[in-house]
Amino acid sequence: MKVNLQKLGNSRAVVIPKPLLAQAGLDETTGVDMTLEGQSIVLRKPPSPAREGWSEAAAQLAASDDDALVMGDFSNEADAELKW
Image (cartoon, rainbow, N blue to C red; front, side, top):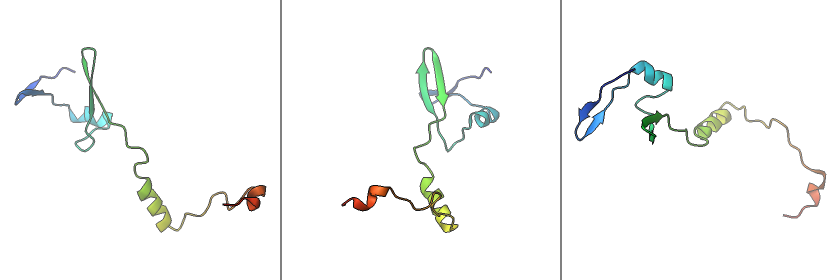
């Protein structure tokens, strides 16, 4: 797909069609990582931060009263002899 560069101050802009953005999973809230690879400008969806959303998911789990131990309570045979 060929698109034109548009003047934007001292820079240039490219309009990316909405269907292409949707296919890439991009919108105005995600932003993009932009790199130069050879003579190509590459836009990529930025990686999600590690453990993003875990806190909210844990709070929802606790609120639903579904946070019981999956494997039950267990210990090793020699644990009683350990001094902490």
